[in-house]
Length: 126
Image 1: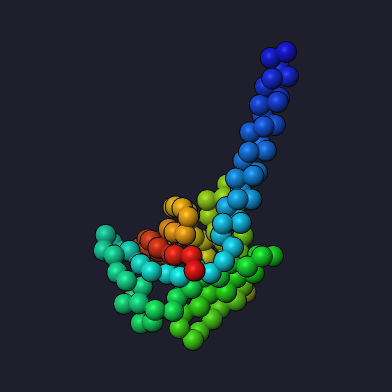
Image 2: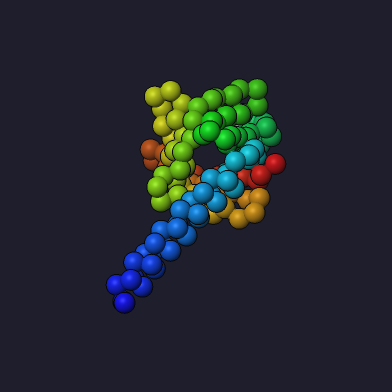
């Protein structure tokens, strides 16, 4: 009897975790505007860092990705890791990993670990 209950609970947990992963993917689909960049304890408006207010990450269905900075664009693909905590963007042979720190409503906070610094990127869904 206990074994049956444990098997049922394991199945239920797996179903819930899979549904949460699908929910993260669904929430991520859309156009996200970068509004703040934080590095070394300092926070700056994205426009000040990049010289343009037009900075977007666009996550499309079928894992298509477009990154826009002003008039320049980069296309590639995106996927979530199995634990649903990291977004992997691939552009040709280059891969970039963004750790999801928070995703609540229309706000998305990502972390990008570069060679010697860690950037926190705050996005608002458009």
